Every structure is written in structure tokens, then in C-alpha cells.
Length: 258
Image 1: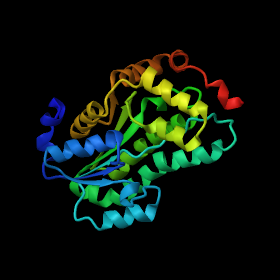
Image 2: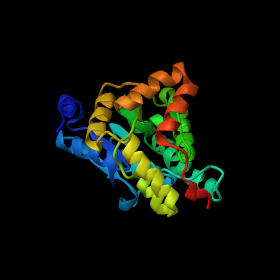
Image 3: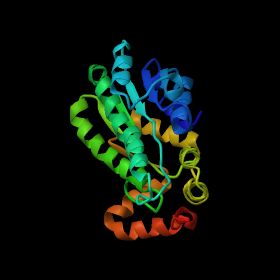
Image 4: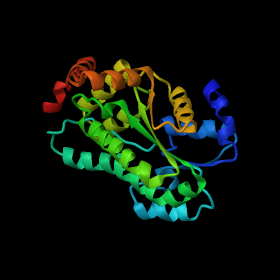
């Protein structure tokens, strides 16, 4: 258990916390760390039969709960193709549905419970909502939209609080899964570059930072030094930040146009 998780143990003990997207990555780590400090955790994902993109599924599940103290929306998928590729519209719709619509569905379904408990709604956003690179367009667009959704949800869910976590490079399988879905050599190269050039933080460390931000009811929190840096300089020099990130990740692999 991390020091940060130990510090927040008193806040979560006995709380009913819902983690959407608990199958792997940061979501799984959030669920594990919450269990370790005595929270009552409901881990939801497709493997448990829960589909956040289905509004009725979200509503039916939440209505069966006696109390909900916090919701962590950690579900997310990526697409690693160019926006001008064939099939990119379908990919973009799938990414948007999971990353944005699913969050709205869950917020709507849990709204009454969260208001009554003065709870917390926490989204796992991305530093890629502020910048992008070739092959990351759909993912970046969905995360930028999620940031606007979060701003709209704050007054709607009050007195519950909403925390938007801008996650930097974390060693998860999100782009590996995107590569498996597309099956192209280019998409596998995008994943390799993500892991080798940007993913530095372990999921356990990211989860501890997310829990800390949620416990403190921060409106927005950068998860990882890279996310903090991008957040700072993107507002001062957005074009320069975009060029730096694009150069670091590199152009889209040539195989994509073969």
C-alpha cells in the first residue's frame, strides 16, 4: 500500500465505492487499493456484464444500490488509426461512446445517490486531451470532450464533487488493446512508441494519486510529472507544446498507408 493510500484510508473505510472499468490498468489498481483500506468496492466492467455505454444498464444497476458514496469512471478505450483512414468514423464513435457517453450515463444513473451522500464522481481523463499526435486523434478528441462534460457535471451533481484526473503516460494496455482490434502493423508500432517514449508511471502509483485527488475533492489533478508539465505549458504555448509532443512520439508509421 502506498503512503498516499495510507493517508486517505480514513476517508474510504466503509464507503461504497463504484469503480467502472475495474478489469485492468488503473481501474483495477484503484479497486485493489480501496479494498485494502476497507472500502466496500463494486468493480464493474464488461466481464461482469456491465456496459457503461448502455444507459439502461447503468440506471438499473444504480437503482439496486442502497447507497453510493463515490464513482470512479476508469473505463476507456483508444484507437490508433489516422482520422482520414477508412473505418475511422466507426472507431471514433466507439471511442467516444466509451470514453464520454459512458461517463455521462454513469453520472446520470448515480446522480441522486451521489447528491444524497455528498459523494464524489471521479473521471480518468488524459493529458492527451490537451495535445495529440498522429494516431492519437480519436482518443485525444474524446478526452477533450470528457473535460467539457466534467465542467458541465459539476453544478449538476452538487453538493457531490467532481474530480477530473489528467493522466499522463501510464504503463497500461490501452493502446495494445487498440492494436489488437485493428490488427495493423502501424497500430502495433503506435503502442510500442507509447510504451517506450511516454509511458513511465506504473498503474499502482497512478491509482494512488487519483485516490488522493478524489479524497481532497480537487476539481482537476495532473497524474504524473508529464501530465503536470503538459498542463502548465500547453496554456502558455499550445502550439509549441503540440510540436514537442508530436516530435517525441513521431509521425504515424508508413505501413498505415500501404
